[in-house]
Image (tube, rainbow, N blue to C red; front, side, top):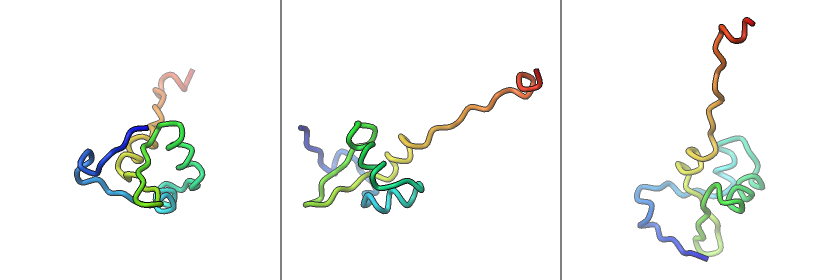
Length: 74
């Protein structure tokens, strides 16, 4: 297990799992799953778990590519 320090992420905005879940309209359980599968890093602050809101935004939001209008007319 590796440990991280806040100095690795200057200017990071660490929030609780509930706040992060509310920000994206997902469940706390989903945030925990993403930490577990390595999509997002979780940080212990004492007994609490925090996530970097910006990292979550970068990793969770995926753009859906639009199809060409010419292709959809076929």
